[in-house]
Length: 386
Ligand SMILES: [Zn+2]
Image (cartoon, rainbow, N blue to C red; front, side, top):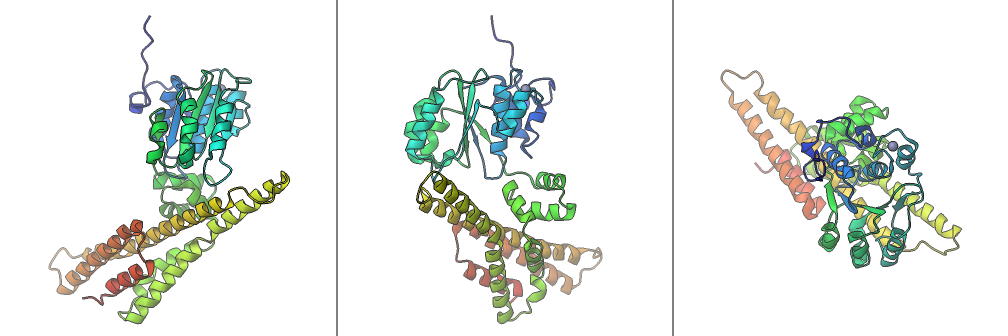
């Protein structure tokens, strides 16, 4: 007898969306996943016909780990993800014996860690009909891929892999091809804002932080607790009024903005310092002298701090572009009749200023010399190049 028709597949989440609200897993199981309609639709479809391995991939702070637990709940719940039984609740809390969450201990997922995952995959489930192995940071598994591949491709029938990765570098290609892949996007700005408001953040601050979050909930969370955030935003907004057409003012503003971007990294640096303290305590508790793979962890911290700087600079430039855009709009307001040459000139200048900011923003991924970039930008914004 043929299988009953399936309402949707992982590749075609739209096919099932909203057609049958009673279909399990229930949508509320994914309540913790913010602004990922497409991924949630794909996960719900995928959970209805479990396969041996899933790969959830997308930018940091996009909710992949939360989604991984929700998927695990759907796979372990006797009803297929009812959202209200003890199993669902325990899995969502991370407190079910058949949910195995694996995090790397050092900078990368090492070969010996991959081997212990392979051993773990052979275990029988303790309570449910299957066990779910959630493996985090698989994008850092480069060297461990060969050790993992065979088991991910064909685990015991009672084991399901949920792999989580920030991106899918070429060395991951073989693993990727063995999984049902579920892509995650940056969280839309209005969803970040609503999420913050739901956590008690003032709506105006929530909007500002969401705009600066780059679609990352982890970044939004740190910015909310960052006492310097509002002041930095104000500093960028004040740039046009600070530029008086002199080279001295342009240079001073450029320098101050970059100092503010340095300052912006402080909360992340503090978080990294706390992480090292915890790791050192854990190492001491098991009698180790130091943190295993400390250098690699510090390398990762430096990478994250660089990325954070770039994100902050991008946000500052976007804020500044907004100020000049407002000038374009206000220069054209109430000018239905004859436009005076002065208005035309103001408008043309503002359009040029916005274009210069956009050009600077586009240069950021190429790791430019930030001082030169900002100096040159302030010269253009001052009108000194005209
Ligand atoms: Zn349930």
